[in-house]
Length: 95
Image 1 (spheres, rainbow, N blue to C red):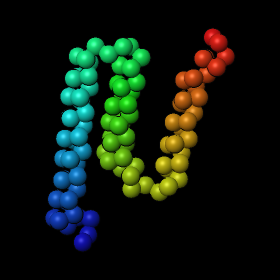
Image 2 (image 1 turned 45 degrees about the vertical axis):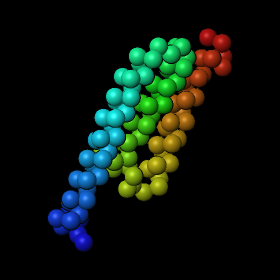
Image 3 (image 1 turned 90 degrees about the horizontal axis):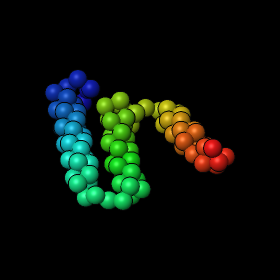
């Protein structure tokens, strides 16, 4: 089956529709959680978890990172690690 065959295209379309539905459900979940009036810290953690899942879905499927070579994934993981280091740097040094 070639990448441009009707079966392959239909398979990709089904995948994109599933990802879109997952993103829509996660968006509704985000809005729903906002009505729960959780404590601020828990609300931020939940919001960041949902946003991380949504961002991962977009990166993996719409940006085609799931089909890239392992080096691209390794660089992405390294960038995320550096992001967290920079995010937490002020709390480590008491600024």
